[in-house]
Image 1 (cartoon, rainbow, N blue to C red):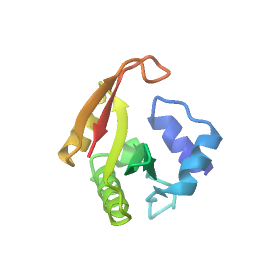
Image 2: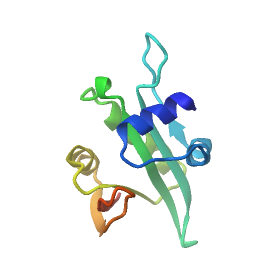
Image 3: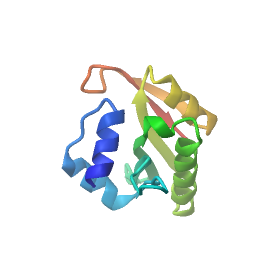
Image 4: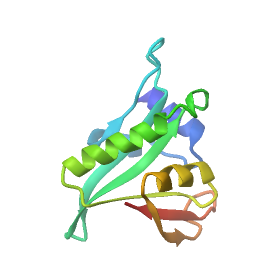
Length: 135
């Protein structure tokens, strides 16, 4: 858990406390590791729940890849594998939020079929807006 927390805290702007990690990691997560050191090189953290008691919804809470491992398809693979797993588990839609100016994340998610559903003003603690994306 400490290595995963460090990876997320180094790469994402939103601060998370240990309880957030425990909540999400207990539900659904994947984290590939460096074959030479077994250190995590990326992480995706998701959950699945009923939305408004009507829709089986998947949620991508966190996605982070170590800067030294980017541009190798790791984030795409993590998201694709999570989408597959959630869909095989009966998820009808998948949502996430990302900062409105995180063009790399927006490009990644949109290339996988996500669409911008809504702009969320001052969504993050740093005051930045977010886009909610849905698949």
